Length: 443
Image (cartoon, rainbow, N blue to C red):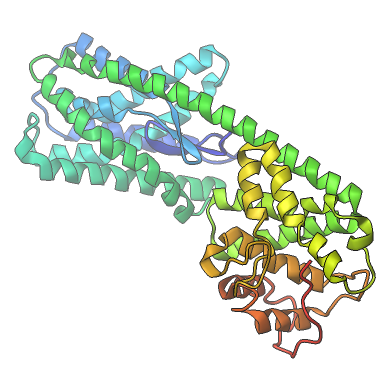
């Protein structure tokens, strides 16, 4: 699964950087800052070299574990980073974090997943450690105590602040990613760090009697690794299934278009309008996915309707209209046979000709009883029908179509959906509320 932006060590950094970006300056500043804290912050601690090596290797092991969070990935290094703050001389912790990052990256180099020359870029991640190091170092180096929880909370907040400022600043300058975009994405990573920090503190208590107590965190790291691997398999499976559903949906769309060219082209136009409304209403990713499928397949049931009725160049008889009004039910039946996601889409397709006032078909439901996506597609369907040449009339001008939407807002269509659709066309034409000249098509 490809992510354009990723997190490592609970930090948010790019998978790639543009040529010419001064990552060497970032690296130099990071190393010099870490060296400065090591030189300036006093310490009475002198752990044995084997203990230091164990901490660095444990950090590297945690660093190698990554699991998807939102649009990126996170790793549980907080489990080892917190004990480091209480076992190592606090000023040397950033250097230990940098060393653990390098060691944890070597495995990817061996497997050919990362070029050795790219490893130093990851050392920039050590910036996040400077906040807690400064807070705890200036407060006076001492062992973990529950009574110091306000200090530890301040240290954790400083970690987030320093990391957010450094990461968002780098990505803004290097890749042009707005800080607001990054900060929203980083919330998931910070929530994971906040959840793991207390466990890391418990490991720090265990490490007071022996610095090798940090190994108590490794079984949890291994357990998280198992969960992450299983989650990755499920995500990959879901992506494959989503692609299969999407392929099936477009295949059905092609079937509709082959059966009746206008209906097929109309459905694709409705998809575009529906996505505009979804943008205006700020629907979730899942709702947008469902809306796209529903818009594409809202007329799939028309493959069961005689072409003589669909293309009739005049008003339908009551008997013909009764046949036409069954196309949403037929569409639901077709999609329920496919099952899964498209089965759920079929249930929404059934309601795409309901009216907001309850006078629609096939069930006569009203208002909020109608699924939101069906309300959106119904409005976009009618708008496209009005602004497209039909067998029995010419297309309406845009301003007249907008006026008609406004006239039936609250009766035929959801007012919020009407407002969103009209807002999506602002600046494209003079959308004046002119009196309507024809009635909307209900087919």
